[in-house]
Each structure stands twice: as structure tokens, then as C-alpha cells.
Image (cartoon, rainbow, N blue to C red):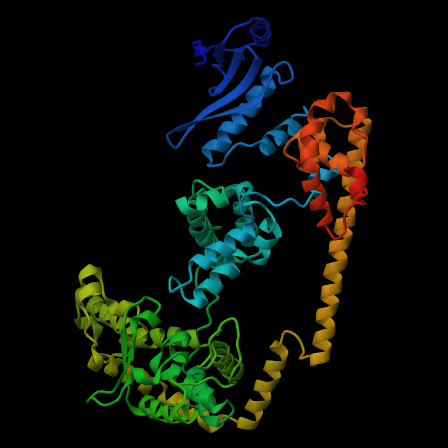
Length: 598
């Protein structure tokens, strides 16, 4: 039989007296509050109740928040305002949120320790689970392994872990993350804070996607407005970058030729200096990418291996061509397809799960420990040298107009882009999609200028470098950077077993604690110290039938509660299921004898 539609009255400013009058009058009417839009007092045959009604994403959301006189007008307005703000922020309303509002207003006591100590999984992702899902979605070629590792380190950094790990994603809002960003700013970690803002916007975009919204509980990307801390004037972007000078570049080549490093590392390190490519591109270079048969030998780098997903060609001449020939001979001896084969065969690391080529850490540490130069800082040095050559020209700039000067500067910057693979200076859709010119002759001229610039510093460094002292320095720095001393296999086994024992003891302690809590709740419910609703909330049980079934399994006499007689029959149908659940716990409560209970 269809229900009669409710009569809606025009919005009016409700008062406490008017609410009392409405509660006493029978009817089927809905009263909206003019002072708090979205708050309604609904009167029906079953009594009066306060409700929130708010539009979100083209859909009206309604939620019951209580009934008068238990919930007064003033408190109803406060809860309604908080609920409407929460819905507009992209979050749902649930009983857990409503419980928190009641506690905050003093309408309900603080929840018992059971509610906070119960280790019940949230229905939506925890923060760390969301991060795992996000990083997993970037696999299968969407992002490089190094990028995925960098994203995870940003999203799971020390400041973030301390504040967010273990929290449900639906309980995290922009203000929470903004506080983390602000804390990083006070710690002078401006670059990290800027990266965190970028990653949080991308991460929350993933969480709010249609396919992930249900699991994450996030409907809108509330991190869009997240802003990084402002940098002080004395610490602009790039102020901490240490650009190596030409003597430092020369020292890197001197170390590579001295025999201090492993032969493969030496060749790769010098190849970095001469070609200026990223360390990942250098380390994973393949023999079949070396085009050596033509008039101009060059290195043909496939687009899928480049950061910007576009092919790149680097001319090979002089020493860089000699390095390629030497490296190919080494690769043939090891049977590797890579130009710079792995040094320790069979080693698997997080950064290199499928080895075959030299590891990134071997290349970076070999250069930084011995010459205080990182592969990426060489790209800074190259940019500074090539752009700075404009100031060394013999032409009298006083005879040039401003347009000619700016044109020469722009040409220099374009030369840098041609080598560093910043889309090789391509601008616009046409260049990006249709221009595949390799420009080997132009690139060779730029690289020859670079080789000429570092020629004298290299010769000076070779003359002054002491390989014995260099080897000692390298070993000392490796030891100082080693995170933990190497342990014997037996010691590692003992440490692992100790961790297992600690984890087991922790779990047993938590289980015993849970058992004590459950017993306390059952006893309080049996003696009438807590209500049915409080017991259900404390034990996270869905209905009174489950509660009675648990008490039957615990051996309680339900006849003490005549008011529960109506649900005993249904509970008896569930008690075997509950008993089996208890039996599955390795450390559960003592159970009654099966036959006796039946």
C-alpha cells in the first residue's frame, strides 16, 4: 500500500517551544529550519526526527541525526552544519561520524576502550593501502621503476608516515595534509614539501576516479588547492644545487682512467661525462643501439627508454667511440646484451629487479665517492659551460643590436636542449609528432665544444691524481655510507628469528588483551551495566541476534533477560557459526563443551 506523501511547510525559524509543540502534535509533516538550511524536523506516525538534506553531485543526500527531545534544537543545528560541510568536502556521513558529533557535544560519553582498541579493519582503504594501489597502477610501462620508487618515497616520507599511516583515507582531509606540508616547511625541506603537494594532488585524483572511489571512499579530489610553503628570499629554488666546475669534471675523467673503479664502472662513468645522458639511460644502454657502420656513428636511444618518451640520437666520436668499442668487447665476453654489463652477476635489488646491466648505485656511488660528482650534476655543468661560452666570444657585443644578442643566447640554449634531450628543443604539436631529424652534425659540434672545454682540466687532473690515495678515499667513503655492517649468515638467521618471536609475542599479547575486553563487555552486558546498543557498538556486531549468540557460546544464561526471549530462537541458529569463529582463533576465550552447549 503506497505511503502518503509528507506535507512540507515553508522554511521557518524553529524555536525550542515550536519544536516541543510539533513533537506533541500528531501528523505527517516536514518542517525546514530557516536558520540552518538543510536541517529538517520530520513528524510521522513513529515520532519526530531530525534530518539533514543536502545536494551533492546532482543527488540529494538525506541522513537522520537524532530525535527530540534527546537531541535539542541547538545541537541539531550544530550537527547539521558540520554534516553539510562534510558532504560538500566530498565525504559521506555515517554512524561513526555521528557518534563523534554526539561525543563532541557532550550528549554521549567517550567510547569505552573497547572501541579504540578493537582491531577491526576499515571498510575503505587505509592510507598505506591506497599508496600501494596507486603505485601498482603506475606499473606496466605507465611510469618507470625509478619514478615509482620516488613517488612512494614522497608519499611515505617520515613526516607523512608519522601522521597518516594507519588512518582511513576518508578521515584525511586537506587541512591534515597542509599541516604536514607546513611542518616540512618549518624544517627547511622546501623541495620535499613541493614534491609532496604535487604527489598528493595526483594521488587523490587516483583515489577519486570512478573505479577507485568505492574502495577509497573519496569522491572528489580535495587536494587540488593544496599549496607548498613559501620559500624564504635567501633560499630560492636551486640555491642548494652544487654545480661542479671544470676541474671537478676533469677529476671525474681522471678517476675513471686511473683504474680505481671497476673496469665497467670506469667506462660507464667516462661515457656519462662525454655524452651527458641520464644515468638510467647510460646504465641500460644496449649494444644493438650503437650504430657504428655509417659515416657518422651514433647512439640510437629508443623512445620508450627516455624520460620524455621520445627517441634521441647522440653522435659518437673520439674517446666516446673508443669507449663503445671497448665496452662491446667486454659485453661479448660476458654474453650480455647491455653495453655495460652487471658487475655482480645474479644480484637482485629494488632498483634493478631484472639485472643484466650495471646498477644505478654502482655508477652514482663510483663517481660521487671518488670525484664528488654525480651524473646529474654533470648536466648542470654542461649547461653552464655551453651557455657561458656566449660571454667568451671575441665579437664586440657593442656592435650588435639587442635582437641579435637575444638570438645568439636562444641558439645556445637550444644547443643544450639538443644534447640533454629536453625534447631536443621541439616546440609545439607539429615538432613533437612529425620532426624526427637527428641533427647529428649539429650535436657533434656542440659536444666537441664540451670536449675542448674539459680537455685541459682533464689533463691537469690526470697529472695530479694519486690512484693509491684515491683508492683509499673510495673505500673509506663506502664504509662510512654503509647503512649497516655486513653480518654472517648465522647472525642474520638469529636476527630474523628474534623478529619472528617478537611479532608472535606482540600478537599473543594483543589477542589476550582482546579476550579480556570481550569478557568485560559480556559481563557488563549480563549485569546490565551497559545497554544493548553500547555492547553492539563495542564489539562491532551487526545486530542483537549476534550478541545473544556470542553470549550463548560464552556459556551465559540468557533467561536472566526475559526481554531477549524473542531473539533467542534466531540466535540459536547462529551460535554454531559463532562457535566455529571462536574455535578458529588460536588464542580465544574458553568455550563450553560442544555437546553440553547444544
